[in-house]
Length: 461
Image 1 (spheres, rainbow, N blue to C red):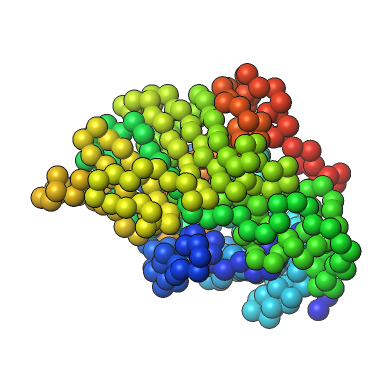
Image 2 (image 1 turned 135 degrees about the vertical axis):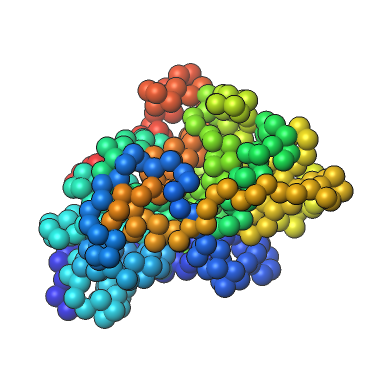
């Protein structure tokens, strides 16, 4: 098969179920089966959340969209197949095995290793990006600047600055964007948002999110001389990150291994808080915090990798009818105190809303109002957020008709920016006073090195 040289794959493949939820530690069963997760992702809502302006309608809803897929194995391959009803005209991956398999499924598509060369192909209208986290923003920004619609896996940015650039890039209102937080399309999240916003638990002034996941493997950069596998374009996988020798340690456990490295990902907060605290951001209409502080082990994390556990507190000012609110993140086994009526030790992931009249605990597929006896005869509000046609279908329809998407880059970029501020606070070991307008921690100039990053020559954004 003839290919053009050069970024793409999460190596090795990282499955849908792993990307959508944490596994319980010590070998216990996943929180949800694949069937349950796929069913949840198939549900969704249309036109409820604010879009990036009025998206340009590129064609009739009945015409097929010309889609390019960057990363065609693992999660990226799942995104590609969700768009199989359209014209898949380009395939890009740094892993020869994944690219060859995808080419058999879509034999008319042109193949590439380097997304930069892929964008020379003039018939591309939309791009699906499922690569490693450190290449999300470079690919998405290049696509948007060339006038392409973009669906990108979470988190869409590797830094606070990248997240802001992506928010700004979609605000011209001409392009459809969507971040791959597929659970946002589920019915359960909609019902929780309605309960919180209708006042079922009173005024909410505090919310907590958590995930049991612990980064795996070595905490120090691996050593030893290992040949690059013949199927892998290592230089292109590294992309904008600082160059380092290939080592199988980065890939022994799929995404749970490579995304803990600061050069490539943002650990559990980047991989899971984007799903979990998405619910709090939606229900509480979170904008930008005024301060962020973190605690972790080690105290300022490891130089190379995400800490063994991390807790973060964001303070948000009043917005609209909502009063000031504090939002917390806990991972690596840390959790909020269990309210009466539920043992959160049994919940591998979740969100807890604390209202002045009650509590609401939720995860991907369930929610419970507490205390249980208080809500025994409670009648929930009539559903007001419509079901979705599906997370990917919502984006495809937006590309064609200009309809809104719920996880557009304006909304998801803000969510991503706020979450990654937590990693900045961890790495500097200080509470940050945040000036969102100027993208500055006003009391901590040393935070700048983590708010923005240096790019390898040839990979600047």
